[in-house]
Structures are given as structure tokens and as C-alpha cells.
Amino acid sequence: MSDPIRQQDFEAYARAAQARLHRTAYLLCGDADAARDLVQTTLAKLFQHWRRAQAADHLDAYARTVLTRTYLAERRRRLRDLLAHRRPDPVTPATEPDLKVTLLAALAGLPPRARAMVVLRYWDDLSVATVAELLRCSESTVKSQCSRSRARLREQLGDAHVYVPGH
Image 1 (cartoon, rainbow, N blue to C red):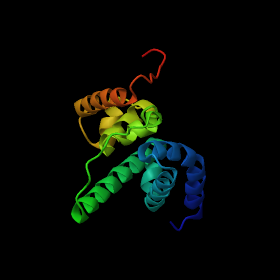
Image 2 (image 1 turned 120 degrees about the vertical axis):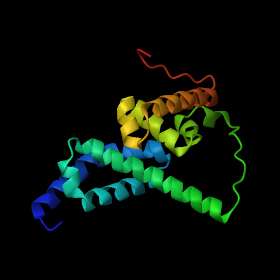
Image 3 (image 1 turned 180 degrees about the vertical axis):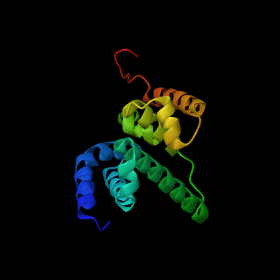
Image 4 (image 1 turned 135 degrees about the vertical axis):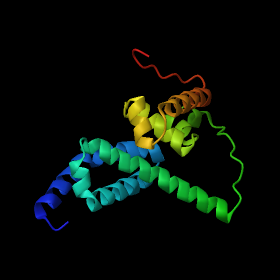
């Protein structure tokens, strides 16, 4: 990016969007350090392809797409590496009641793609169609995965109810 005006545009956007991207990244990763790394990787990719990003109809949606796809790609790569090098231990459910009532602990129990769907659909309040487009899947896949994930979250959270007006 040799054009100083484009670089200034990117820097201004990155400063303005960093907190929003970090919030979504934190919900996806469940870890502040991993979320910071994910945001930095996302911003690096945006910088690399700034002309294309800037030409997008909705720059924030474009950035969120890059963030989500980067998260999913990293999770797939880590899983592949883990499976290639050792046999995974069976997952044991958390026994401490405090962990069961936290949303992050419950989200951590979801597979990465399902977690991304739940975060994008319910936290970022994106439509089913938008999430489907973002994750390159059908709307029915988003609906069924979100339904299953919500049931699983309800099961994990037990008696801890989250009341949302109008739902």
C-alpha cells in the first residue's frame, strides 16, 4: 500500500473498529490473548487487501467475515495438528457450578463453527441469511445448528436463565 491516503484510511478504520472486532473475537475464542491475536491477524489481512475491503458495500461486515473465517481456519488447523500428533483425551464435563453458569464456559463447549454461528446470530444480531452467507452454508444449516447449540447451552447452563425481552 504505497498510497499514504489509503494507509491513513486503513489506520483510521482499524482504530475505530478494533474494539468491535475484539468483542466478537473474544466471544469466539473465549480468551483475551487469543482474541487480540485474532484481531491483529484480521487487521493484517484487511491491510493486505485494503483496496478490496474498502470497495465493499459494508466494510464492517467485510471485516467481521475476515475475522470469522480466520477464526474457523485457525481452529481447523489446530485440530488437524492436534489429531496428527496425539490422541485427544475424552472431554469431561465441568463439575464446578460456577463454570456451568458462565456463558463463556458454555460457549467453549460448542464446536467452533456452531460457536461462530451462535455468536454472530445472537450476540452480533445478524440475520440467518447473513450468517449463512458469512460462513458459506445454507440458511437451514444456520437454523438447525443454532437450535441445537441453544439447546446444548440451556442444558449446560441448567437453572441459570437469561431473560431477553421479547423472546
